[in-house]
Image (cartoon, rainbow, N blue to C red):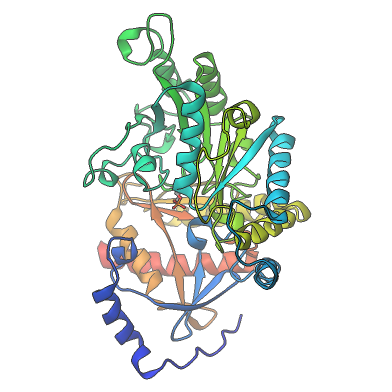
Length: 468
Ligand SMILES: Cc1ncc(COP(=O)(O)O)c(C=O)c1O
């Protein structure tokens, strides 16, 4: 794809000047300064970003899976523009058509895949929707405490970081609520119990079940009444490193939770909307959630909308009446319009087939590469949620240094593909920050996957040469 020439910056808007201003006036408290050198982007299209010099970067993370349907998707952009010209703003206490149609389509979709009636409640960001889900669970169970997974990520508001495993996210702020009880996730490449998937007989699940055996394990009382109201899960762990669990894990977990009246809150913020080949990632495991939380790709990364779906008995007006919760920008008209079109797009195109086919091709190419490079210790995935776990030459010891070097080489825009200079956008996650969490556009072509492999191999070779 040919990039158009970048607009000439005004005298005081050169990259150097802007970076100086950024250093002085932007807070450094977000994640921008994780990168060794800062790159400024000025344009995006399809699966590519372009920096202000016009260099093209193949994006393998798509804004942490918020842009599943490609940058500048013409159909989704048109829906946004159309809404801009009709009803661009409206206080969320009044109704508009797109909100109602969006909620209807989403609730009917959940009903068709999970066979359960429910309602949709909108918010703006993922973390706020997580808190809405927790409110719903607390109303029903009258219990403040929740389980969540080690390696789980649910956002950075005070409530959401209480159920996100890393202490780093809470350390500076103290506790404002109830910190989750963190349970080991079935991360089989680095099994927390040192078992092997082939022979473990779901040991981790049995360990969880044992917690309910006696009141002395601190989870239930004498009669089996649990102190915990909800378990927040990601069906495939996102920030934790795109970890895919064994097929039996979630069905077993749900059975245990049901026995003790604990609600399963399914966080689909990163894995929802066909990232794993299904509308919701949990569908892959045949388990019915009690509450679902989603955001990100619902608007393809444009005007943000997040939401929860909850079972009718958890969210009916009788238990969740007017004013239970509110946010000024929830169900904003630009967001609902583009989200409605995104849902229409997902109904009309066969993403399941496309994602499974492209995902299998991409995974196959990565596995071929891993045969040559023992540093690619684990390569796995579900649909187009793929992981490359970077290790030392032993194929197991986490190699964060190599991961960082490769990520920065990609960002430097100095790789070559098809005879031209190019960049590669990679995101890093994982328990040891040594996993490339690969989330390309769901429209990525096989040719683009081949280019991605070529770019990754070059970055890998350079990274190995620099670090070994
Ligand atoms: C699984 C998951 N839950 C929650 C969140 C928080 O969403 P937000 O950043 O929109 O608050 C994220 C963000 O990456 C996520 O991946």
